[in-house]
Amino acid sequence: MSELVVHSIPGSPFGRAVLIALEEKAAAYRFAPVAPATLRTAAHLARHPFGRVPVLEHGTFRLYETQAILRYLDRVLPGVALTPAEPRSAGRMDQMMNVNDWYVFQGVGNVIAFQRIIAPRLMGRACDEAAIEAALPRARAVFAELAAQLGADPYFAGAQVSLADVLLAPQLDFLQQTPEWEPLAGPHGDLRRWLDRMNERPSLKATTWTRVAEMAEGALRASAA
Image 1 (cartoon, one colour):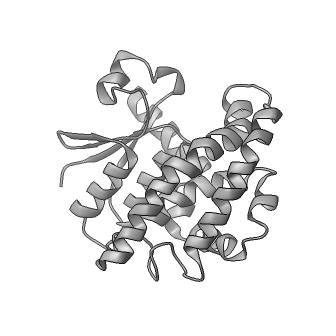
Image 2 (cartoon, one colour):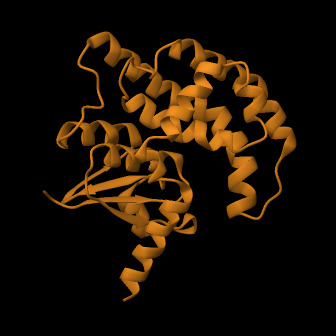
């Protein structure tokens, strides 16, 4: 099989979702680190015309947009299926993947996690407390809906892990590292237990920010050799 290469930034929850899918499939891949400062360079724009991550290369085939990458990997790689065969379960999976992109990330993760983690850690900037406060009503509504959709099921599409869990887990794991996690997740025990269950999976343990940063350092050393 042609080499699978993932271009991403260590710490990116979207990039991590792709790595989790590859780990779930027990697929060999190479991590190609992207420095945040290079997102608008000609070299990266040739990979992703909108200057974002992740980007997948599979031999001569290139693909961007995380949902497209995840679905592609599930189609072409052997191993456990990450898309339910039952149509309603697959529909629930698709719904929750869109909830992730439009409601969990937009207005919640890209505000709270950004301000608490990305801005100070990667940009040396202080948190914008007003921005976080303004995001909290939306965040409470999002967490309530996630809990309602999960219900008492072990995973978002039912009894088995699906692409919805693969996509949502990195976002929620990021938010778990912020002070806002306890008040947001506290009322939703099943949602908290879902994240604990996901974080125990080898695929998530293999793709923490620390582990992916180690992959990036190894890739940089190899390219310099």
